[in-house]
Length: 241
Ligand SMILES: C[S@@+](CC[C@H](N)C(=O)[O-])C[C@H]1O[C@@H](n2cnc3c(N)ncnc32)[C@H](O)[C@@H]1O
Image 1 (cartoon, helix red, strand yellow):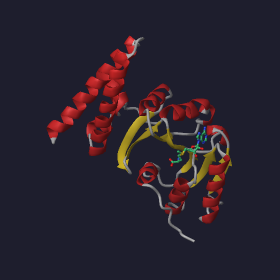
Image 2: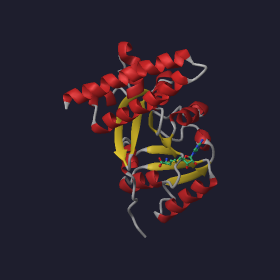
Image 3: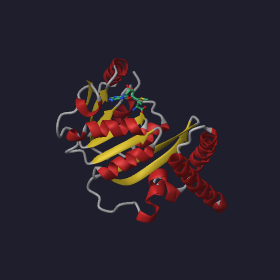
Image 4: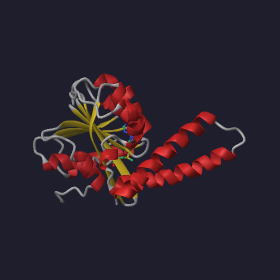
């Protein structure tokens, strides 16, 4: 039996945001690789692995048994935060889903968040909607990560409740919500590649929207504005090279 979990770089980076001695839930855990990796690395961590689908739930059970982690990782079948009791965990990980699904899971499970002071989210798309949910619900974004793996670019958001200083500035808040306040400051290669790709994609969408018989003018205006922001940030990085 192997004692190493072969974890993706994406999930390793997600795991790196957890503190030592974490008492956390991984919602949408699939094979439960992340909680096994964390609990094998840190003997003081404990986790709940939540899964809504039978197949991944069974896989999670098998992985936890394989690593003999049954006493520290509890695998539960259920929708979102419904698998949790009140005050059971202090940190929450939700990774590998769309931003709107992450947002829905958080919104529907609000009553389970009393003791959750730290949320780590890794939305595959639409990180902005998760950043907005944090603001609306008293969680302050305290760090972000972005990485490229196997041709995909992933953003990771870490938000805490006990932080006072907001990373947002009113005059550029909309841009910060789109790009990520920390990521747009760091502007690393993965960030550049992501926004170059998004810029080209949005350009194609706008051409199609302009050609459509019925135009959603408000959306066209908003998309053109975002296209301009993307162009500005890409040029800024290009000029610094
Ligand atoms: C793409 S996988 C990501 C797995 C893992 N978190 C990762 O990042 O690699 C998404 C998982 O979330 C589960 N899932 C989707 N909606 C869920 C929900 N509402 N509650 C719990 N699990 C959910 C799916 O069954 C699937 O196993």
